Image (cartoon, rainbow, N blue to C red; front, top):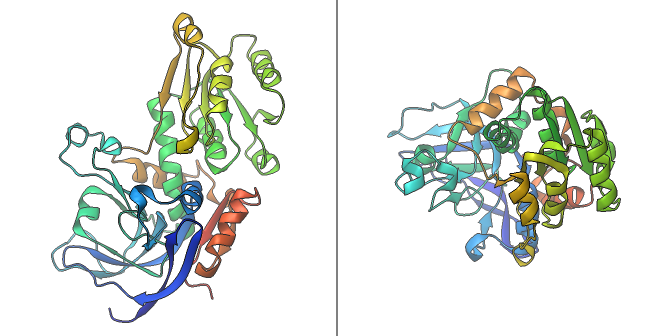
Length: 352
């Protein structure tokens, strides 16, 4: 397909510009996608301010993508022209120690759409064979909108995290963070049968309230008061699980004080490279037999699992998507997220 498209291109820290570029050629063993929706992720906001991994510049960002196959390469026969597909960013190598054991999210040579490959902040996107073979591309269920399908990527890691940490009926779950990820943890925990959900937020408390946590706390209160409230809500024992869904290390010690003996603290949100150290009470971990674990990305079934959860109504995408912007307003969309005015902003590359 010949012609010109528009794309929002990351030129360097704090600099995104909209450019006209040739529509990419469809690889013979890949696909050409017409992008209809791409979410702005919190990691996109951080990358805009701090730079892409490996110092990459002049790149089309965006990794929460949904669109239509407008060309299918002759040397691939899985997807057909006209099919609607959702994409997630991770591309594994397929041959490292982790990949061979099914842990594709921990791939030693992990790459991403929107960083190492052009992403979805554009009207068209070409997918080479390695992305189709070692990345995430799933058909969108019939009747699901492109926006909801693009939101599936955000859901994937939350579902995988709670599945791996066995959140189940009767559990008390503390979630620190009231952004889209924190609210998703609330919905997913409820769908998995959690008995009590305590959500601690800061700048999106009113939006978080619509997800019906059993207890909603203001994270600007002193840490001692928050810990005491969680203890009181759990009969003095502590929560089964605490999820740190904010990009700050300071809350990790608070979470440790909120869980019961043999409870679990999940470090979910990545933190800035210059503030990544944390100090945890090792005696509490030792004597309480507390598990402290990380959660990053999702297994090979991750995107498919999320699309299924959205299709089943376990997750309500409409409650998260607060705004839509054209490519020319990508930075404005990022500002809406940073200022707490939106949970999820979607880019429609075809808006004027």
